[in-house]
Length: 109
Image: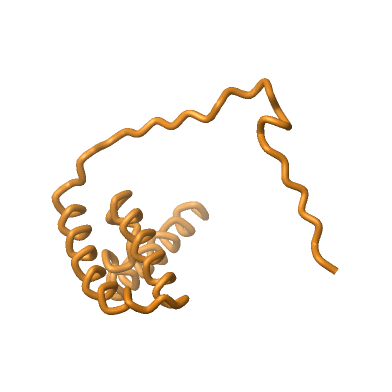
């Protein structure tokens, strides 16, 4: 038994809706973003060149990962794990715990 898929086009469902519009806003990356982007791009090109001859699932996954990570790098640097290593995260967690304790003391007074 095969699944039943109902597929309709936008033109069949809602004629009153306007057609899709795409607006592209271009902006420059800040120098730190540009450096991280270029570094990751160069590393990825080397890795992908060795895997490009293979037409398997791993190569496709690697390309998808590269593209999505480059898109993330172009959004904001602070979104990436390499920006905050484990020691920074542990420090931040300790500070948050201290602040919570202080706030608890202040709120009880």
